[in-house]
Image 1 (cartoon, helix red, strand yellow):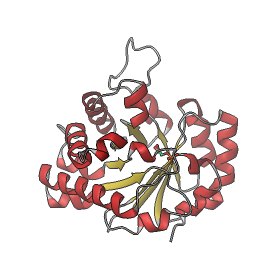
Image 2 (cartoon, rainbow, N blue to C red; image 1 turned 180 degrees about the vertical axis):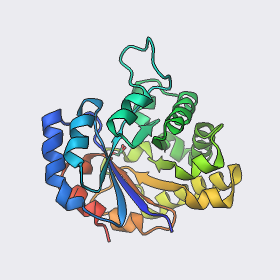
Image 3 (spheres, protein in one colour; image 1 turned 90 degrees about the horizontal axis):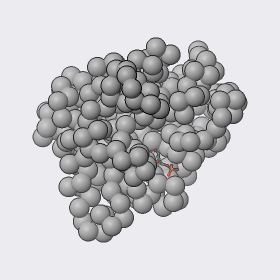
Image 4 (spheres, helix red, strand yellow; image 1 turned 135 degrees about the vertical axis):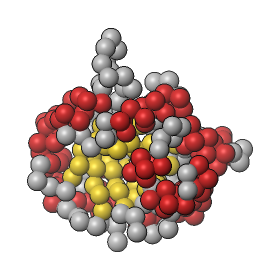
Length: 248
Ligand code: 13P
């Protein structure tokens, strides 16, 4: 049985002191042994967030990372910078990074490989635009995105990874995919992993849904057999996140 993983993607929100205050507020609300809880904060808040979360069940993740070890890459953050301070997860290939910062399936693949090399657990994002959904190419697209993202990743490593299916039209819009729509695509992603690897890998890998997850819709979404939790934006910045973690 896969353990659910519920991650908050804070995006570009909260200063370091606000991050500490939010973690202190949410800590008792997200104290659950049943699910893995991850807060993905801006880079500058990672160290205070790790300190604030110490001794709790909250793990800290980054929202991006570069795929080189070090060097002349102004403004970038390397995997060892993240692991040295205790970061456990890294979101890779979020649609906002693809849209605004020119991330491609190929750069996402390089980052996934590099994260794994450093024992960081990648949360690999995929998902379609509204136009792509209306054209009926959602499943083709997420198959392509995930296939390229996992190129060169061994079966043993793939099992530890997390995939987040986030339909772009549902992000920050209040418009959630129905639980059936989300389940259909998450199941297709799992099937794709079975084709690329094996049934064993497909059964182990965790597939999250993201896009306007809320306290009101989490229980229906997470009850679906192929949805192993969520990647939560807006609602992860408030007490509502506690409701999402305790969705049952
Ligand atoms: P919202 O939950 O705000 O729609 O954001 C989803 C998301 O992009 C998480 O990565």
